[in-house]
Image 1: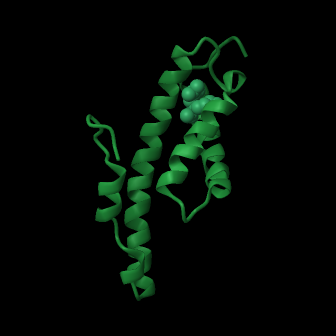
Image 2: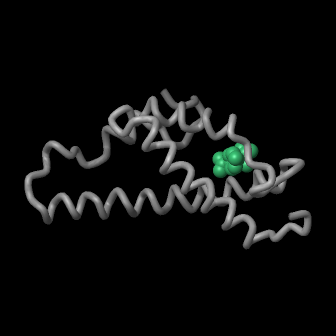
Image 3: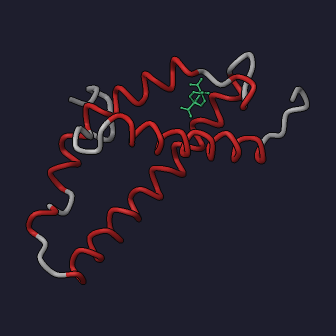
Length: 114
Ligand SMILES: O=C(O)C(=O)C[C@]1(C(=O)O)C=C[C@@H](O)C=C1
């Protein structure tokens, strides 16, 4: 499902992650969560770095240049990989992720036009 030149194939990643239904103890479930969260942290940080680049390239970056259409596209695309979570929850999660990225970009490269 990933692009040919993609370094992260979402389908392949799903297969390598701990399978929830195979976990029976609290300790094992928390250990699996810790593992997933470590990967999530790496991905979230990289995503914020990429979003920062976008802010520098866009004619109007930061919160002032927020693009609801693009954000809907992101959630729709992600929904296909996370049908169990559902688009509404995913939209709330991604709203927080996007806002954190914009805040982080603002700190890294403060703009004087907002
Ligand atoms: O794609 C953009 O235009 C961005 O600024 C990046 C991004 C994102 O974090 O993905 C951030 C804010 C926009 O509202 C939409 C998407």
